[in-house]
Length: 289
Image: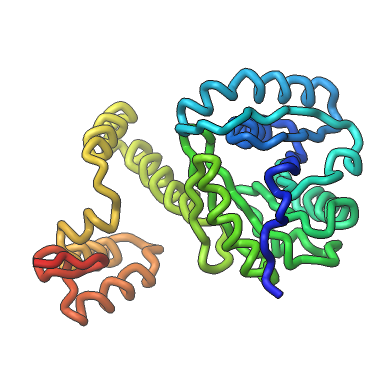
């Protein structure tokens, strides 16, 4: 039977396992959205700093995300993992990026958390399929990769390969309550969606400067101009024309080593169908009239 959120979900806390920078930001979002939050960390200093930060940031987080819950959530801390996860409907792992550590953490969470609790990893690079070696119920495990809330409020959801579809669907809907914008990663991918895109942008920016083509301040100034209009990448390619985009990519492939074939293959599929973008009424998007 597909997973559904517990009937008492709004009376149960969210637990953050790890009181670092991102862990405390995530805690603030859930408390700002009206859920009680419990933060676990072995370090007394980290726990207290996380609680202080999360509580202080609640008003600003509510303003940024447009949250107006009936109540603000309580922020508590715990030094015992079993006590921390007791009663939680969701546990979010936010420990350092080490597979061995995360594997141990998920084994412990699977053993100690409530049977209906969702177990999430906030890892920015490691798929949860690599963390479930000691998990007996992997159907409740998935990646929920938060960017930098509250300003960067996107969350990427990716299955561990065995995640119950109902878990993902429930979170896609539930996250909206907290001012988060969920995006589903359709297949396992190292780096998820945006980190892969950002990696390519970052790498090319560094290459332009290293090759002496431009100065850092020139790159940043041009970036500000291009992003000011707010036109996203696939909309922009449709404006330019996918036949033109393909020709440009073919040229890069001729003059530079290591250009992957996949992007040109995708563009050819669209251009072969006559979908060239705005000028033909359809590209990645449709343009009626």
